[in-house]
Amino acid sequence: MRVGMRVFESAANVDLPDRRVAVSGDWHGNLGWLRAWAPAIRRLAPDVTTIFQVGDWWVDPVATDAIFTATEITRVFVTLGNHEAWGEITPLLAAHPGQAVRVSEVTWLLPRPSRVRVGGRGVLSLGGAASVDRLWRVEGRDWWPDEEITDEQVAAAIAGGPTDVLLTHESPEGTPVPEVGDVLRTNPQGWPDAALEASTRSRQQVTRVWGAVDAALLVHGHMHVAGSGALPDGRRVVALGRDGFPGNLGLLDLETLHMEIPPLFEILTATRPTHD
Ligand SMILES: [Mn+2]
Image (tube, rainbow, N blue to C red; front, side, top):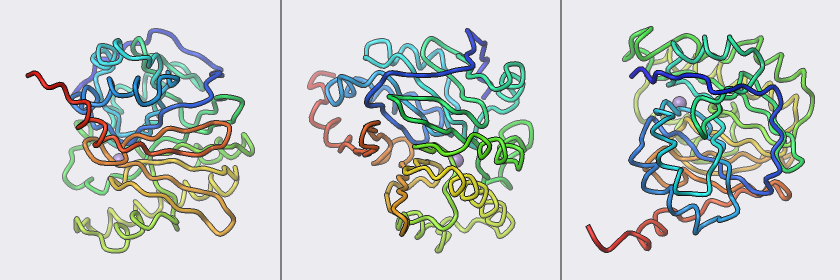
């Protein structure tokens, strides 16, 4: 799907006053999923006006505007994943080096890597991940080598020094999240060895960055399972679920760096309109 994005504006510095933000896992262009939960955010967290989306976004940004118009959400910042319209996105980011680019009323694509400030906290965004379904995709149509987390991006991310929060699409290697560890150990989808090797290298890039910038909290998507865990040194990981599944949405308190995963399914069931 070609998204047909245009740039509304770009910004070299993003510094938000928010004390709490939403962080959402993979969307995969699923507008129906966004429509299902967007109205619930106002009840769930009326103070939240910003969403950080952690990749496999590939949604029509203009259609997204219509969904969030009736909510308090005014900004969606995207840490790009692997399944993205790179054929459009890479030239667009390259035309605004190091800048966040706004591609709709609410949607901003973050450069690779990117540092923003939120509620006085440093947030590092490191996009990209390896596609384990690479063999089923066609280069230039639904797969691009741009998904890779390059050594240059790793170096640039590390060069900025320590940060509080690391947002990635890819998981770190050696994750303390049991649910993600299970997927990696058992390969339930039967992905081929070559894809798994690329996936491991990709996770190692995240681990290199995370170790260097020492973020207390890493939040990622991509693995399509939700969970959390901590390393022996106390650094925590939250893995977010994919669209349509539990744990796709978290609420991050910037003061405590605590991530709350609201029981979205229960909330959606309880608030479903009774009329057709
Ligand atoms: Mn992904």
